[in-house]
Figure (tube, rainbow, N blue to C red):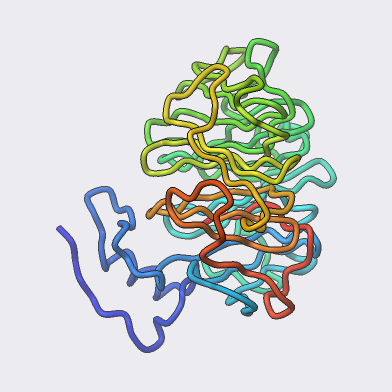
Length: 325
């Protein structure tokens, strides 16, 4: 049963605690998820700014040269060459950091300024090695794609400090190779963007296990894929860094298969994309070198963005890296 409430007055943008409570109450389903019908006021766009080691937060509907509503930046944040980003069900923010030993820093919902993480996963026991993409499962376990040693490490919900992974996918049979992005579907299957492939692992996969699907070969048009995301039909979206495209593969695709759609061409404004995300209405968000571009659901070919986020007021500094919505 849904509970309907009004959002007005102080509840004017995403990210504040009252707004988050209101948005959940507005359309809470049986599993507590935020449904597709919620207005844009309830959704945020999170962008990892590699140029100044920060996370900028905007309304998901932001367009043009607009200021962030939150900007996590400063020495206390622990952000150090940040790359991947994901949020949990209560809008806590998880970020991977490449520098040093590598780390995952977690911030409270609505965090802004020189905010100290509420948790940090770091240390030799974590086995983090240039952590890149990050994802969460429905139990809050944390999945990290480690670019340097070609593994996916999994940490228990709430893990902090020098915490060892509860599972590690790694070894020659996994076909992992410089993984940059990771995503999970509702069943817990694990999708990874590698240097020249997309590999998929069964829920709970651990050790030197072969993928249950592997997309690779000349027909795929994969060119140094880094970001990966899934839509409501479990179609697979990949941001290809090398040739500035986004390729889309059918749910369950495997082998040397052609994309079902490709965003490519001058009108797309794609420029060395690293991150890709898909919202509840299947709109496509891409982090490019110096701008965020957004495309309509089903966009293909040389399609113009429906929105672009760029300019001095955005406070974004190239290169932009991961994003979440």
